[in-house]
Image (cartoon, rainbow, N blue to C red):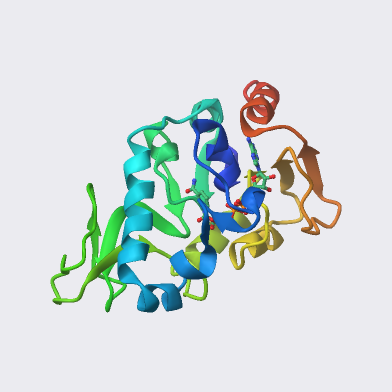
Amino acid sequence: MKNIVILSGAGISAESGIQTFRDTDGLWENHSIKDVATPAGWRKDRTLVLEFYNQRRRQLKDVKPNKAHELVKALEAFYNVQIITQNIDDLHERAGSTNVLHLHGELNKSRSANNAKLIYSQDGDINIGDKAEDDAQLRPHIVWFGEDVPLMSEAEKIVKEADILIVIGTSMQVYPAAGLVREISAECTLVVINPNDTDFDFNGRAVHIKENATKGMTYLYNELATK
Ligand code: NAD
């Protein structure tokens, strides 16, 4: 079987009702990124940061995977499919996808504020005073801007082996994630699904399906499923 690698971003979950962030003037659900997605924001106001991600986590209970997530799963009948997602939601898993690597962490996990290796599953809210086993405050298991991306080298290996790389719903502005596209082999086919253009230079290699995720994936699935 050929290898399909999916690089997904916030746009794949937009039609499930989860807001993206570049589309709303650089604000994430009305908050500035520096307040809710940086170590400095955490140092400044832990309560605000915890509440922000608590709300995002609660929202997961009200949303469902959409057809794009489902068709990515359906490709597993024909290909080895590996997903590298920048998303912190769990919609790929809930669509049934087998191999999902969360480059920027997961809402449904927490970790010690002092030790990135002490990671826990997290169902409900994280509150001030909730502690990890090292007695440090729990924080969301999210890679914030300015922090290392621990799964980056694993993601690079996956992308190098791709026969087809499908980039769905990402503005390609967040690094190092966007740089993964540079790791594809000379033989790899590169497809981008995004209703908008991005500033990213795909070196003329990308076939751009200029549609939203559900329509774009429906078209692409019909092309790929029979081959
Ligand atoms: P982004 O918000 O920067 O860009 C979203 C992209 O999706 C844009 O290029 C936009 O044109 C496109 N888009 C909008 N609607 C679409 C649709 N219906 N179908 C397909 N594409 C659509 O997202 P990003 O590049 O993923 O970077 C944002 C960062 O913020 C990520 O690191 C992510 O962790 C975080 N984030 C995550 C979520 C989530 O987990 N669902 C939501 C918002 C932000």
